[in-house]
Length: 462
Image 1 (cartoon, rainbow, N blue to C red):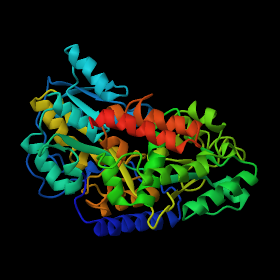
Image 2: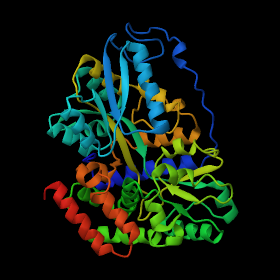
Image 3: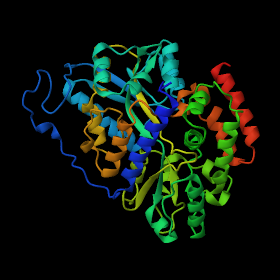
Image 4: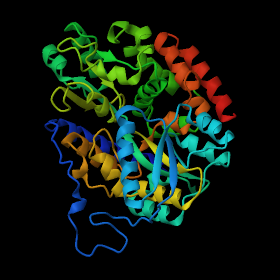
């Protein structure tokens, strides 16, 4: 697990992170335009040999080296990451090609490896996928330079989730705060609705928005991972971190009463078809990007007033005319139990073809130099504590980043991402499919629990 600290310490840290985030989001949520100027032109005194001015890392010259990096990222997220790869190319002379991958990523990589053409590095979105890659002898351990960069820039918790059997395989390049609800500011203003602090208040706010003539929630149910995120936030807040850890490791069954309580709570929203844009059937045909954009298009009458998901929603909002901080605002996922949840996710760079070039790229991705490039572009958070908060393009993003770093080692990583991919990371199967079925039929709590446990037991081999 990510954290081995006591439950008390974990709760305290989660409260601290949640309080920081709540305070951040309560500030003027105006999108402050940060400078995108390249600061590397400001040459510091005493620049170390091999380092470019304004950078923290010495990289080897790799002229003639070609590398491939595979990731499931699409759209603006892919475009922004390519700019990071372009910076690595500029500084080393290597040529790096981005390879679009599909979920489940392990299956995609398996087909590449079987064909004798694995990418040099894969960005894996689940700790469970890292373990599978190690178990299949695909993944290669990080070298001394990459490990040194990790030790310098990452908390122990973020290092540990990239380890398998004590060896470091993953560089968590990208993180996510997955405990946020974004809302259309004009819809809330017209409805006279405020930002809720508790789940009970969220249900009441949804009713207020509905009474004003706008459907409260947009849900990207076609992508099952969005539904697992809903469940995890409710479960972490309601059942607490100790139970969360036990369920993540399948040390308690999905038939446990705590799961029943969380599903029953979810049904208070999922069970009201008028609360969801298009009803359950519509939600199950809506992919995540559309769930965001339809919340912030349509003037005073969008398809929905709110959408739940992580900080990366900003990338999708950017594809509309809405501005973060004015038209699109955000509040922390409300407390279901005593404490508001703080759930993190992330993507790790894992080497599949060991070489000087691949090790150099992994080292680069572990550095603040790489993260700073993408931080400036928005819609991105780094767990790298050496990234200057001023790199982020607006105050909202800066405060989210500070809250993420302030959580230190005591955070909870996305539960489904910790599971074997067959259960927690495969479209149309396991938890993704079971929660899609629950969205369609939220009255069947017991049946959903039984199906979740059956699929979990098979995937975990227990």
